[in-house]
Image (spheres, rainbow, N blue to C red):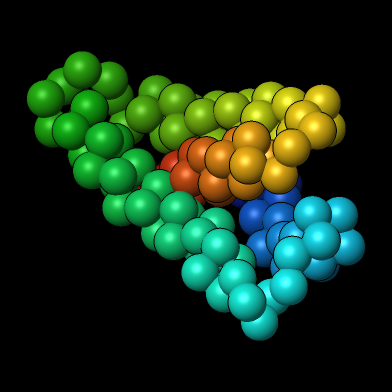
Length: 116
């Protein structure tokens, strides 16, 4: 589990540190004019943290899954869903789908927090 969390945290910090650079260099956004758009990935991670915690607590409290399987499910959601969505970004030719996929990926990246 610790090995898994190290890779999740590495991906998390790489994404958050490279999002502004990606938006400026690739999407050609002016950060001064689009501050709200630049803050959306951070808002989505927060929403992923809170809803992931609620979802995992719901699974454990209602005895749908054990704590171990709930952690595994959250880890899988936090790794594979963003990987698929971020790969899909490479095939988009418009900025709007790229931003949508990136924000959804960041939402599911927030599911890594309930894995602890």
